[in-house]
Image (cartoon, rainbow, N blue to C red; front, side, top):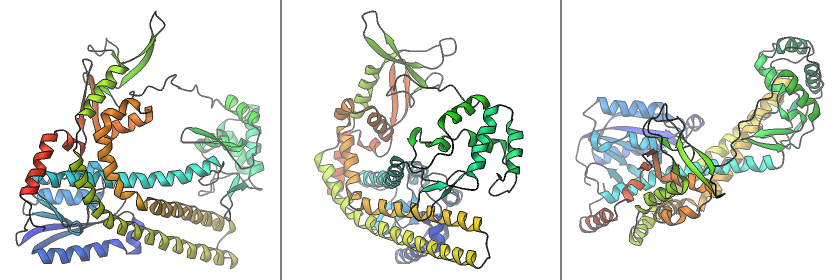
Length: 504
């Protein structure tokens, strides 16, 4: 659409971390680009908002300030931003900016796109897909980083800072026994085993032996003592993400000693385990009282078993408790997915647009790699300076070891992040197509999916599932909400083809 002259606008520029802001890469370049864009379009910039925080979680400070400023100032006509993923990288942020009801435009300068009240439904569809892609891209990068952690866990390597009694070995990123504190830790377990020491008395005795807080230099808190004495790491195993791993590090105590201490100190808790992994338990709530819907397996006299879902509150509290079988819930989910329909023509036109968008995302990835590489080099310099300071006696050995370990850990994370960025280099352009194909085939694929896959698909497409009188009710998330009525999609296509508008 053609932009009218002398509009008032705010500018929003964002980088994905405070560290990037310090490095001075992205925000100045964004602001320069948007100022030139505004001048070209005859737009008056009223205020600029700069964000140097992650957008993975909604609730960014400057994003909220910008939004409130626009709402409070009726003379603001537009928001200027470089690209879609600079404004929002999650669905919640997208829904907060209802530009139609606010009566404003959103200019995505580098994408040559303006979203306004008069935007075609096809443009809205493409915009929604881009937002969802941005979120998925961010999620995929996090997944690649998690894969790096998972690989270390499989090898029995604890991916974080070593607990007291151990040290992080800097050259090969393994964990070794601390010859000074390991005997004290072992003695702590032996003393606890006798049953003659409370946590308060034990921490006082251990302080005399040299066991103290790394930062405070004082006695360990009772909570720290409790965590240490219940840490499986000391006998050679560790928990991570609810899973137990066999560590590759040297054990300080035996497993038998550890288990005896758990009993003596009262650390053993009765596990709360579910006998069955019910596929739909968790996301569904009762529409009458708002409580979670739970599941249970029942066996009929014939010997056949069924899984029933019902409100967690009993009939005394929730008067409308309804029992619904799992297969009935699945049928209703299939019906929900069957309403999502897209023609091959729509998917093809979207593919063409996303291939163009891929060029911009490639530029983003290259800049991210550049930023992380610069930070890695900066940490190298810091490590070298720490070593010099240690040699010249300006810092203590323990300070050098701790700070160097912190830098090395951060460098490991940077290496994983860079690898994740490079790994996703060819995947990005297919994300939007994959999402549309999943949406188009969801009703057919859903019954054949594994339990985890079903839960992921439900979470991707639907929101707020509730059960009311044995009927599943739900809302569609964007952009899937736009895929419901195929006749409307066809109308969007016809309007776009017959009434193409000039680029802003």
